[in-house]
Amino acid sequence: MRGAYDFEVFRAVYDKVMAKWPAEREAVRVPTPFGTTYVNVCGPPDAPPLLLLPGGGGATSASWYAQADDLARRRRVYAVDLIGAPGLSVPAADRHPRTVADLAAWLDALLDGLGVGAADLGGHSYGAWIALHYALRAPARVRRLFLLDPTQCFAGYKATYLLHALPMLLRPTPRRVRAFLEWETGGADLDPDWLRLQEAAAGFPSPKPVTGPRPAPDALRGLDVPVLLLLAGGSRTLPHSRLRSSGGTPITYEVATRAAGLLPRVEADVLPDVSHHALPQAGPPELGRRLSEFLAG
Image (cartoon, rainbow, N blue to C red; front, side):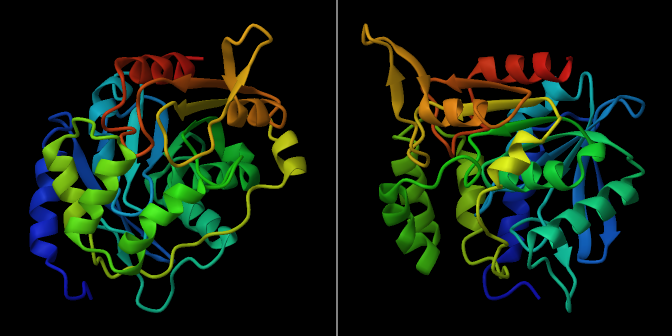
């Protein structure tokens, strides 16, 4: 049951954003114990698989449209609508993910249904949190992992971010969603279709998302998977305080340093002049280059 909000409007805008994907894109529906997962697929069928997880809130697989063409040149891309979140996945009536273990079981079933044994894995924001937890629980199924401005992985939220998000979280409306995104992105020139999709997702009848503590430091130290961590330099979400050398020149960001001290095989960097919610759909050209280089090994 879709609830009182207008699903037809949501679907129309969703399809408009998906029209920005490569022309050969196809959609598949994969049954899992938690419901039917909707996956947008593109790229050569015999290329190595890449699973993409979107952020939370109103984000969907459609948000990867700006990166899909580049990624699909060397990978079979599987971009997922999260179960129980805005999108075209349909959760089971009697079961939805409640724990991190449930999310891992969902991704196991999804990869099995796609006929994929192991894949490269990437996520943005909340999707990065899911991806990192999955890599910790099923490292044999994750070849390489990239995290775009991940939340609740290496640092908590900024207090100002939570205060600005509170009205939208308490009573989501299109107007509140737009106001929040315009604040977090600093008035950046966002794709109007993508922005309308975020507005159309307001009020989506979703169960409470799975949340939890950050991954344990000891678990992160034992993760033997190559990781690319890209932080949004203009993010108002994470406490990206700059660490400076004695000469006053910025040398890195605190979150990147924290991750580098925990993950044994991490490459961490900052994408300047882009905000948290502008990723990945409005990322700088450097984003596509970094992702392609990392996935190429």
